[in-house]
Length: 172
Image (tube, rainbow, N blue to C red; front, side, top):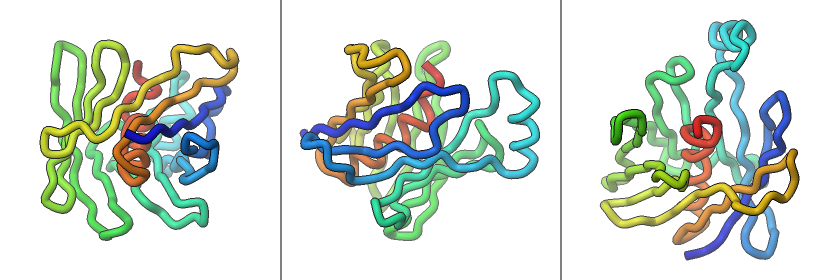
């Protein structure tokens, strides 16, 4: 499996862009926070903890790769594969009492994404693990989190990163 990382600066306002880098430190993709729709933006401003955001991952030239969308933050998720221009619903599954996993189907392949007890997100394709995403155990800085992505290739690393950041990063 190939190794990738991205860094999240801990600020009051969640970061708008984060670079997904390979082992040599070269940026490959950018993870973007998407704006809330108008009504959700009003609710987000009124709530002290805010609403969950959805994310988009692009190539460095800005060309979209994968994105998560929803009808309202926290409800009705779908994933868009910008290469094939296919949008598919993301199903939510209760795994344990409070744990949630997500599944979807792209290009006749079944994907399943869940977080284990240690906080690692596992992405499986047709019951074979293709990526794992976890927070670093090393404290680099109190203002910075390092997220590690292990994947079979860059494509699956970008998919795992956008799923992890949307569904699990802010919901430990």
